[in-house]
Amino acid sequence: MKLIYILFFAALNFFYKNVRAQDSSRVELNIEWQNPVWDHNFPDPTVIMTPDSTFYAYGTNGGFDGKHAHIQVAKSKDGVHWNWLGDALHDKPKWASHSPYFWAPDVIYDKRNKRYVLYYAAKSNVDTLGMGIGMAVSSTPKGPFHNIDTPLICGKKFEVLDPMAFEDPRTGKHYMYWGSDFKPIMVQQLSSNWLSFAKGSKAKVALYPDIDHDYDKLIEGAWVIYHKGYYFLFYSGDNCCGVKAHYAVMVARSKYPEGPFIRYSKVHSTMSSVILQANEHWIAPGHNCAVKDEYGNWWMYYHAIPDSSFRKGDYSRVLLRDLIIFKNGWPVVNNGSPSWKKQVTNLNSIDFSE
Image 1 (cartoon, one colour):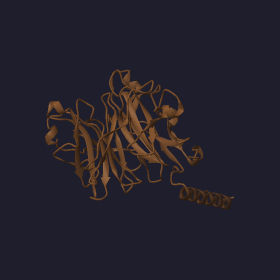
Image 2 (cartoon, rainbow, N blue to C red):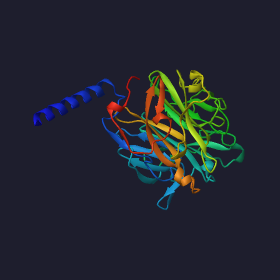
Image 3 (cartoon, rainbow, N blue to C red):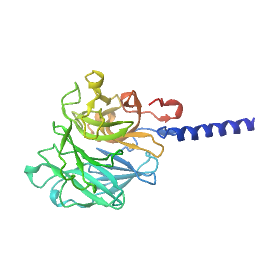
Image 4 (cartoon, one colour):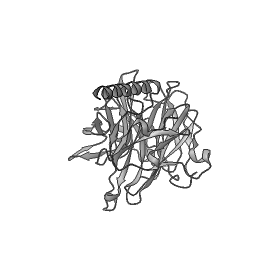
């Protein structure tokens, strides 16, 4: 009997290794997590994975354990259990030295210059310029990130918000996405050093608001990934925060990083492009990012307000994650709403036809 068990598990191990070799997008044999993965206020999250397979998460200004951070940063070895590291941005930039808010960070690794670049939104000292996208650089993902003196771009009120930098895996070109305040989500090519727009490039509309039936009047929180011939644009709307929070994640896709992006609703002749929305446990889920782990699995990290807290008047947005799979050419996240029970995912539970 012992020999039978040994042979069985040896065969299972051989099968798993071959499955992994044939399809790098398959999930681990056994993955466990339960939301929230960080039960503290951590809005507008961006999560990256460094070359040593360590996860770093960045969030809008906030505090933990009596300490304040302009840009929060946390670290995890498994993407589930997190340690708060403090403030990634230790000084305010000159152009936004009066700003009390530093929102919606995004971080990329600049392979050419071997550094990390942090983008964030802040209010300009010049009232007529409104919000702008700031930039800072560091040799390590935890920082401290040192500010660039001038913003990448500024705009009226809140239309320049929620920066997201993207490297096209097909061409190596760099792009910046941004947008909010009832205006379109915009995209423009970045230079090779990630710190300015490419010479001769112009901002283009990636997606207009107010097309779908719900959540679509105000759109923001753009995040782009490339998967099997398509660029998928995740975006959120319509009110992230507070007592009137009404928020969800939607999706559109394109054959090109600058668009035109076509909503899920347009392709399927529906009035909704929502792929993640509230349930009885979570209010206003959204402002997601998507990160691929060392095994090729796509994870969506996002914030949401616990319903139990919401009913008590606490609108803190905690950090959640769920697995992204693809069905019929489109991403699917936990049947359309955040998970709340303990999740156990294995090979047999996933349809890998995509």
